[in-house]
Image (cartoon, rainbow, N blue to C red; front, side):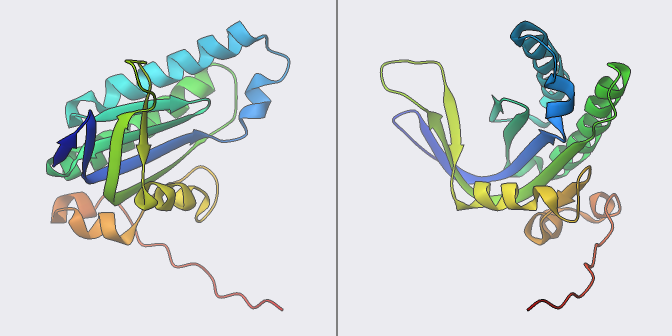
Amino acid sequence: MKNTNELIYDEFVIAVFDIDRFGQIAKGKNPKEIFDFIYEFNSIFKETVLPANPIAIIPQGDTVIAAFPKTEIDNAAAYLLKAKTLCENFIKESGYSCSVSAAVHFGEAAIGKAFKNGANSFQILGNEVNSAFLLLRIPYYGRLTISPVFFRKLNGESRKLFKKYTPPIVYTL
């Protein structure tokens, strides 16, 4: 792990959680109500994944990006599955029928402060972070999708938690 100027550069488990159809929840709500809802959602996510020792958890609106150390691959998988269930339960108990789309990938990223002079805001950047975002809608809303790279890093027991998805062949013009 390279750590320079408050920047950490290494391979991480990268997870993205996104509330599907968030507009349904936000519609007709004032900003404080939206904030309170997102605050609770983020708190549930954080408390659930803490045992997997996240390096960073960065909320961005109705999306949360998290990075976990490569030594926590199997723990991250288990706690991310649990977080998805608990976050969806919270949404349902709040009276909404939205789900959570989640994606997990493994690869290089840089984690560090977003601003100079001590501003308390962080970011996770890199091509592998972009790859995690691209997985969000595969195959469709409401799934926890993992990349083949992440799957190959899991031990045998953790692999049993997931099933292979083979998309249908389509033809386009």
